Length: 377
Image (tube, rainbow, N blue to C red; front, side):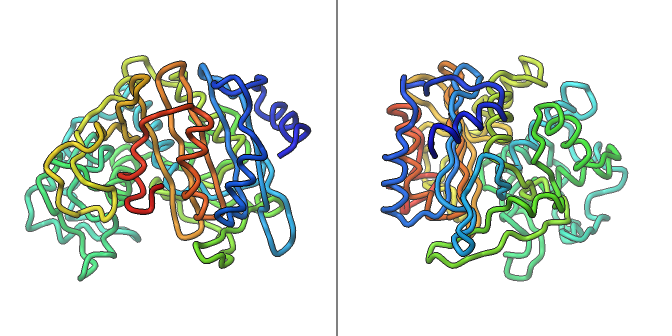
């Protein structure tokens, strides 16, 4: 990224300042050195200070094979950052009194949950386990439903509840699937439309969508796996609150800045989103159902759509997004309403994120070992 690209990004975002929270922009040379060290093909970052975007930078290639650069408006896979944006939608609905975060699923769906089966999940196997009746939106947003990450990874590919709902954290896309289904079946909402009008349009996220758009093809990032293998960006037609969002670094900068400001939420609901709701006792986030270690790890807890931690500067929170060829991360500190947002079309970028976050935010207590396990550096 060179100055001209940064200035162009400032025009796109309409909220750039001259420096990062540390007083100087993240060094291009340092980022490029780290990328070469880990063979990272493409990376984009945004820094937010006082709830405003202060820097956007892009590095490397969106397509190595075609020698195409990664740019601020390059469309990239949002992966599980989608979950945080979806949580923002749910909290807006809670603000409006349209959904109660603590209402049991028995009050949110017209029929008992085991009566439902959709293209993602068959809920019939829950009929013999009455604990499904205790599931609530809060439990689903804090990843404490007791589900595996996905039902298809169960030995028999059947959904089951592994522990008392609300008692512990275990990351679960299935829980987010269920909350999306509650909005669709219980409230009659089109989740893609609600995300578009309430969030993407509101914050000027022009190149973000919950499903594939043909115009994305003109500036699209391919992905690269841990061994450097090309994974072409697929065209997701099915809306998934757990991870179907396509986006750009310019658009993500807008969203995370708005989240820091609390725009679109009441002060009470914004505080609820980033409040430590449920202590996390697992040694690492994955595997999701591994036994708990017996004590909270590094002061981390589940928020609503984010994970909170105790930073030396005060409260902090974060959310990652990952697949075999994607590594995304947003780390935010309440002090001075700061964030660094990182999108990469190469999963190897996760190896350099601790250094990049330190460069952007200064010394911090982001729990990398819990997030990435033994891979953390």
